Image (cartoon, rainbow, N blue to C red):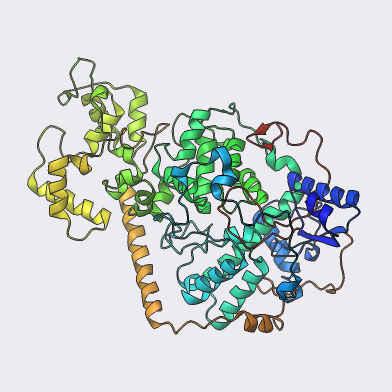
Length: 632
């Protein structure tokens, strides 16, 4: 930037406002260069947010309870604020190529990924221009690509009205956010300033007027409001979002761990819990996973592993294609850090049961899990989500106290005793206490072997009768959603062993901590499968009968939006104060993100928007974990 100021006369620099301390530091550096070189001013604008800062009915630095919860914030905003129409912020650019300014020092072409990454480049991990076959799409940077995605998702495919679920819709059994088209996937363009949230909001409102108003159209606006919540909330929170206790200064009764080996297993998706691992593998490969995946991975890392969450937030910052500081760090402290209130000490036994419940609800056939963890593909759906149900033992693990290899005790006669710990572990998986005790007795109190015995079709010694084997094949075929696969499935098991020769603990790791299973999982799985199948039928029927999508013309849209009034998401009455009346605080601008070109998703970049802040707190963010400073 200083070199540009040396070579050109700079009238002004335009940017979105920033919120977080490091980004505010960059603003100060830009101002200092402009001052030292005698150039124009840095002019900042609020553009990242849906609601303009100056239109809020409260000062984010003195919110009077607005950030106590998202609901409190939403009500305060919807009751008294309006979304500004984008017609007020549309610049008119000159298109004459002769007016373009060329910088002699500029490179003739953009550097390749290998040149940009230097020694950290790994050719094996570079997909080039190809999309990973498991990913729904490959993002391309720039406003043109962003508007094309809006056109495709809302108008061409009608996905907003038919298939959209949303990042935070986790409770509706009929809707799975782990399916393709369940997410708009617009977050990278929003994060990098390639797409205005106000433009997207206006398109959603136009969709409601011209096609239909549904829960989905409300929910996508709710997601935009959430961005404002974490953005403006970070103004009040300041640098506390980078400190281990967060804005609420939460601290566990146990000591935080910084075990790098445990962290790496979490990063590469080898925790032994498939619902966590599938999201982490997708994130590492594509730079993206949905909000539910990020949130449950955060709960697991804090509540079940006890790891310092700032290391994980640093990892997210380094890899997310839609990274934006407040969306990452504020979410970690607001949504994940409360897991420290768990009474159970991390490392003992799984406490975050959402990874079992939501796995069953959102992925009843384990399709998503198998997409990103192909080694689990041979397993039925239930076992693919919870492979510890298999309890398969390797030869070295099968030795018994009497020296025999994998032998079973005979059924107990009369009274017998088993240790309390193994019994609680097996019962916690949903088995009957008496049956669990008998299985533990027969397997020399080995929980894995006891579970395998309880889940087997027989007592563990007799051969499975043909009739039972056929029923098992039918169940496996249903779980895998394969057609007439009973004969093929039986032949595969006969030739390669159970489940295609899958070896638990070798092909896929055993859990890092003691797992549990919920009762009635199969019933919940079937209920989700049935309800989602009904929704699929409704979607297909709507697609067959829907009229041809209206073509989209940007010039026509630009003319039409001049006439659109500002609205609140709920249609609430606007604030009684005059539109021209401005509060005495919070004026200013912001840093517009550079759009155009391609980006792959390392770090942040582009325009993010913000305000407030002020000088960095004493002590800054303290020590560093991989680059970003953090306080103790």
